[in-house]
Length: 429
Ligand code: GLU
Image (tube, rainbow, N blue to C red; front, side, top):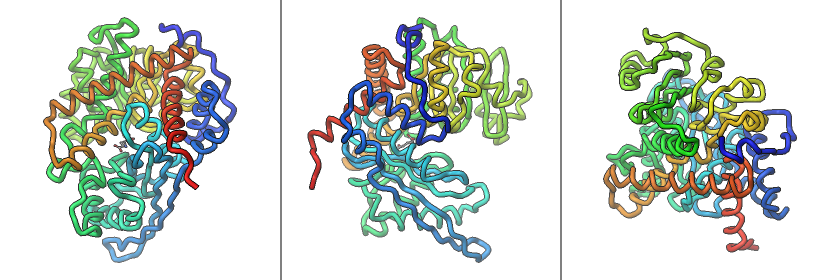
């Protein structure tokens, strides 16, 4: 085990509650103390630049009027226009948006792209909405936020329960208002309308890159290693396939309906075919059905939580039996779980590094849209691999230098970069 993981001693978290914003702030505070961040800068970086709550009236297919609540939080735009996804889910809150927006600020700084951080969403259950209702909801949300969004201001992207089609509607609505096609206002679009090749696979490809980097650091060969992946959506399935191609044995998988285990390892190409046909993993015959809790506690080398927030908490952290955790999702580990994992010698590759491949290729998409010149898939992937490798190396070095976890090492890089930029720009008054 690497030295800083085993000798790590971080102060016990101050707060007992485990909500994503508090989890983000606890890590921020630890890193801010280590670098001796000035109190004024601390206060500046803690407070989101802008928080919008907007009411979205929609005429439903049955003629009734329903009002939805939409959010967009811009955490910071010191490094450039703010960037971050839009999610559709019934349980989202402003606090969650604030945490996710701040994570985007740190993520963009770590992979060294000229963006600030933002996040948005609509409180709704997309499974209960028709395609036409989803379209009206997306368009009205976009039109309510016309003065927030913009290729030089704030650039949305897909996130939980949103996809290329949602991004196409955002692009079209914004373009109709500005009376010209404005592809760079949003990323994660279909390639026919200015999307980048490789964007859909980018997050999973980035997760794979850091997992391979961590295995190498621990002296484990990919084809001698065992992985467990929670979530089989865009991030989980692409990561599973890429690791499978590297010879990693994947013994546990899950989706929203449940989890499955096979000690011999799954053939991931077969599993992807299965999900295409059956829409779920769990009725797959050659596997034992297990619970989500059991999945997270399986003995393995690499555990990849790629589903949602707050999966590894102070309650189950001591039962986690892997060597590496690579956070494909945003915020899957709470701040209270961090010291437990650390004292058990588990190397955690934090979300703000592990899943930064998505926003990196979003940046490539924005660059291509603005140039009007589109890259080959090979160019996209090579540049992505290079940037993820550099980010992983920088975070690793920062953690070693300060004798802290990779997570705190990553926060240190991000906070230092944003704080230095802020000092250079100065405060406009
Ligand atoms: N929603 C993704 C994330 O959490 C992508 C954001 C983007 O591409 O702007 O990183």
